[in-house]
Image (cartoon, rainbow, N blue to C red):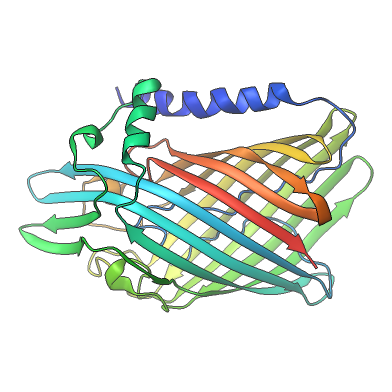
Length: 342
């Protein structure tokens, strides 16, 4: 049953991704294949320092890359056992402004400033109809109150978490850096390998889940390979890294202070102005002392969509993320990312 549920969740994204690919026209192309700048938007996960930038590129010296990324996520899961009960019902809006500056041919520095809103939202009816159309499990969403926010966790009769009022504000600000280890391009290939890191500061309000209350240190190894041919650009990219965190204000006694994460993606650019991509994001559990999937299992989300090169060399990413591991990520997240180098 678990395998069938996972396949049902994967089938719909892959169906649309296949349609996208078939709709393209093979032609000479130089569209670069870049990752979606997004990660797991679960309210209990996105407050930590998991990276949104997993690209293997480094900004050229003297240049600035500015990006604006927006994620709209719908959460619904309810689980309980003899000792625990969790409800994650609400919507998260995350708007992040990021800038990266090329210091030398190998070094870059940057900053990311997120703004978050946690609330009841408006997507419940849409998600219910989506699940009905593609015969996906509702998990009780169709019988729950619509448009509410209720992030609640009880353990052994003690309320460990309760957020039932909408709130917004600046999230946890991150300072980033990158160092290029390898970057070679000719007319047919481009291969890159880069080390990137970040320090996330506890600037967001942890009581409303706009921050974690912890200072996080992230380091990752990012790689990409792109092949250019008469059929367009075909690329594969990935990252692996680690996250070290101080004591969190959120489920403080159960929060793990070390975690690993990874990303794997592939894309095809049939023309110089468009590409289609699919990406898997995962990380090790961020909490311990729980048998509930929402806290104890490794999340796995699939992001699919593509990118458009707009006039003036703006790049627009459009993606939809689905939870494929069951209750470990939002039911659905809609991602938009706009970036440009100056």
